[in-house]
Length: 588
Image (tube, rainbow, N blue to C red; front, side):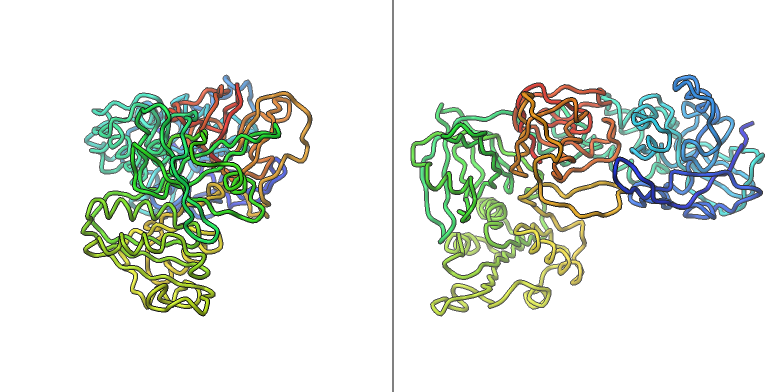
């Protein structure tokens, strides 16, 4: 008979970690007497990161004394206390290899149902003083599991754990855990897991994404962990393309049409994706790497990029001053997870300034397909002289049966005509969005300066557009994800403060416009180097498990230490456990 050995709770606290402050609920201590289990957790317990822990599906975390003994042997420690693994219930019995999703148990007067395996993150490594602990738990098949509370009641140490019923589809915690995190994702096992109604929605979504990637013919990557990164991966390396034409689009924007020099077809982009250019400088300085959205109709014959020539922009000035028709430029394959999704619902293309480029490609694609979808083009510019693609967008909108547009000029000139060149004087705002009438069920594709995008995201939310329908492209890099780290100032990317001379590989962060030599004595992986440079990054486990850090490998090669549990998609890398073995360009 399984038995409850200890009930452990703890409220979140702030701790020091690697020069940062982390808010975490990983420290749990045993309860004296009995405790009430409620729908959202135990009395006296809390989580520091509700995005990854807690809630109805993850109300109570369970770990087994058998696994305690295993880790005492593996880690050569013998000072574990109840709650050591951040669990709420320490139990004797019910190992992960036998307990199944959907099993229902009574403990005391409460009733629980097994909902999913534990999802590990870096904070268990802090709690255990073992940085690799997240990977060790997951790869060992001993992650522990979560319970949802079916009937609230009181529980206490010494209570028997009585099985009330079993799930019809028997899949153990160990099996379900391996199905997501290992490199094996058999279709029949994915379908089997999805027949388990008790499996939490998050895990169901991961398995549906894996099935979708199989149906799409994907041969690499783990869409269950990083669907966007896996679906937008591109082959690394640069291809030499010739400049076929150059056109002036506005006072400060020029378009460059690029074609293959070898007659072979180009990789076809999805509307909204971008390419990375490698621009070689004549003075022997490191090459410039810049990401530019494709602004034309997706094609395997030619790419069009449109570049804003900034007064102090090195890459724009290089293109403007030195690149001419027939010149050859190094160009990556199209990449990026900001692209027009298929569907029948309304679409809003919302941009400011040069942010029009990716959504213009979407407008081209919708026009080319003669899409019957409602399409609303919203654009903000300074005035007519600084309004690129004005004639082009009007033509494309007229070609759509349900297309309409609205342009705002923040400072129209005396020659600019309202109702012809633009519709509203001033800035795009919540009031303008309400006046125009944004369909609340529309998918919104948003691109422009950071402040503009943040303002528009808030305005869209205020009028009732769901955040999940708002897709944003950030030219300057990814939206950072550092779970649990207390917000602090995020300076612009820069060279590392403690940089030392080294002849290591050159690491270029393409979106952050930064290149730095790799120093293995200072950094254990590319994630640590990016953090030292304040390059925006995403991560959670930091040990090659979760794939939150999966990013594009534009060019070059890396080695892994530790080896990830499942490899990223070809053309991507995991920054948290990779080290460069040659000069690399990373899409960050």
